[in-house]
Every structure is written in C-alpha cells, then in structure tokens.
Length: 339
Image (tube, rainbow, N blue to C red; front, side):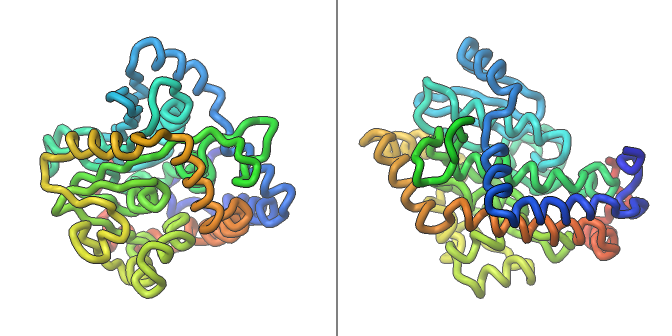
C-alpha cells in the first residue's frame, strides 16, 4: 500500500484495523487456534532450504545463516549493519532458518547465536540480538503485522516446535516436531533478544553481557515478555524491566534466573559443545517429552492464544501512537540515523 513508503509519523494508522481484526480472530477459540496452528507450520520456502542444507551442511539466507556443528544445527543472526537486530527484511530468513534447524534430521539440538559484527563499536565481536530495528521502525519500514508474524511464527516455533498440517499443535496431541534450543548470548540481548531467551531451553551468557527490555523508551509492548518474564524473575522485577527499563546483568542473581550458565568471555564454543553433550547424553526423546510437559504446565497453547489476542490489539494502538515517535526521537535520536 502507499502508506508503506511513508515515515511512521506520516501514516494515518489504518493498520490499527488489522490489530482489531486479529484481536477478534485470536479471541475466538476455534479461529484463534486455527491461526496459531497455521503459523506453526513450516514456511513453503523451507523445504528447498532444508534440501540445500542437507546437501551442503550450511545455508546462507542473507540475514540468517545455518551451520552444522557436531550434534547441533546453529542459526546465526546476521543483520550485521544493525547489530543483528530484527526487522521486516530479516524476518523471512530467520523463520526459514529456524524451520531448517528444527527439521534437520542430522542434528539433535538447535543453537541460536549472533554472527560477528564487522564494523563499529562492536567490530569483531558476536552480538546476540539488538531487538527490533528502531531506525526502520521510525522510518515506517516495519508494518504492524511484522509483530504478529514474528511471535506467532519464528519465536513460537522455537518454544513449541513445528506443527503438522493434519494435527493440532497443542501439547496433548504430542505431534509437534521439536528440538531443544540453546541460546548463546555474547555482548547483549536487547528487547526482542531478551524475549527470545524466555522461549529457549538453555541459555549461556558471557560474563559482562546484559539483558534489557526497553519498552518504555520504544513505546511498544515487548511481545510475549509480559506473558513469560514473571515466570523467571517474579512479578516485581518483570514490571521493573518492562516499565522502568531495569538493566539485568547476566552475571547477577536476577540474570542467573534467565541465564543457566554465565561463562568467561572466549569460552562460548567449548561451553556450547559441553551443554550439547549434556542435553543429549540420555537421548532427546525424553528431553522433548519433558519440554512438552513443562510448557503445558506453564503456557498451554490456549493461554498463548488468549494473550496474543490482547497483544494484537494493544500493539496496534502503540505502533501508531504519537508517543512512539517522540520516544524514538528523544531516546534513539532516530531522525539523525540513516535507514
């Protein structure tokens, strides 16, 4: 549409109607579960990408890469110019890469890690995830539906696995295609990066790395963090992180509630290898069964559906609020950044 070419501040907010519509879709149990099911299916492009990965042992999708390392399929976020942040350009590649990791028959677990950043302040270092691309958000390059596609697709696939076309993806059916996911946090996990840590099974972080959910400075809802973060750190700290931008050092009592191991810088490769061996040592079948049981106790699919209905509506209003632009100009200096 013509609005896609406009800055966020210049749009008339017609996409709010999409949020209201998807709120109603998701609020209806039958329709909402159907939508959740559809979003957990592999993308059509993933079959060809998987075939290439099985043939070559690696896959380059531009903004995401997949490598096989021993028993693991490793997904590398590679939006290097923007510190491996997420935006409308990265979303398809990232989700296809996740599909490939989950479907890969030659690996037992999956790892999410940031690629090496070549330039700027963090040149030569791996950056896990800088969250949503705030510059693209300011310039109107992130449509509202991006939020729903990301969290009903890529992130939810990490948490729940891939669905099969003929079977409901809920935990009781036990028909999902799943792998354990390990997150490797080097430098920081900001915003969406921190959100992902709440969906993965084992998180390793370097000492000195930190986590933030800067929703207050962005003026948006931090996706599923409002649903999940309190399970890790309790309600008060969750509110401080989301509403008061509390920075969480990985090497702290609170940080260790999210990060399972905190290691010295430079020890990530050997630590990942050790964690993979530990997680797969008694076979992955029992691990997946325990994963499903833990997920069912904490966040059954219907709970997710109902939360997603609320999220669709509230995020739509936030996305087109004048406060979002004011926040980005005040805290991000977005008007002076190159898109």
